[in-house]
Image 1 (cartoon, helix red, strand yellow):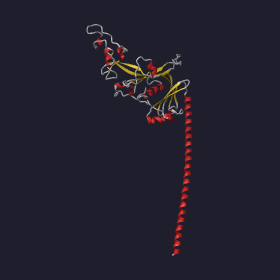
Image 2: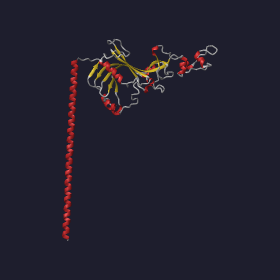
Image 3: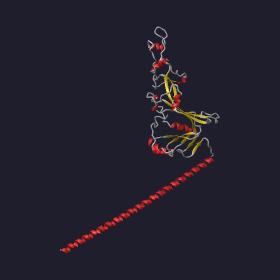
Image 4: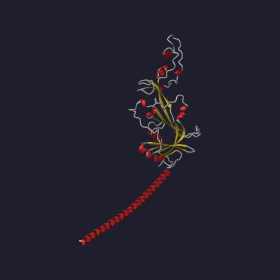
Length: 367
């Protein structure tokens, strides 16, 4: 979904695999070295499946409840002509997708809706319209905001009541096919040549008749017709430059079609935190507080933060005092050692001087 700006073969370090590691720990360990801008964390318990989307290194953090999901293999299984994203000819993951945010409203939208839209857009690199090449636009990621007036009594496929606000995430590949061309000619252009063994000339396949005017034998095998051209003329565009796929040349009229790749998600925003999985709760879908309660909560958080800071300072002061005591003890021990060495040296010098004087007196007596 986020290729190529994602770590496909990322292996977690053993020191980061403990369950007590928080998002703040991962942000500290990974953002500086790998340049990670967003962290997605999926957790599950008996009642729900949650997705946390955090902007590193300082937040905010958006927590979603995953209402429904489908993996890529599930999407491909129900398609008649699935798109092979891993084929060498496709190469659609070498460039970032086009991000489309639909129905998120304008400047009058709610703050949490604006925050969702901005976060989804910033997860992907910005596209410079002036320099982007048409052949690099191969994928589309759609974030569709679904808003209902009130909670519906209708249950979804999972037996859950539908929420008043949900975000639907879809991932598509863009497939272009030339239009205004005979279907048989188009198949030959696209290298889908049928079995022509029963025909005398390729013109018999194109016109459907022989040179004598008789009806030509039908092509067999791979010559069966595929999906017809899109009937919706709004999907027909004139290509300003060459695009992926045979027959999609410059100034050629082609029909654009979206083929879903997966995964498919339906999300419900439940909570927004100001920091990285911490800090003030800026929005909550189920818990609503009046200004006085919010003020009291902020004061409580500030008191707890001040108490934590004071305790940390006291601990640092105790550690510093212990280090100073150890260092002072080490210095005293060093001074005592130097004093003992000095005394020992003075005693040795005194003994040497006494020995010299004794030798001199012995020499004088012998003379």
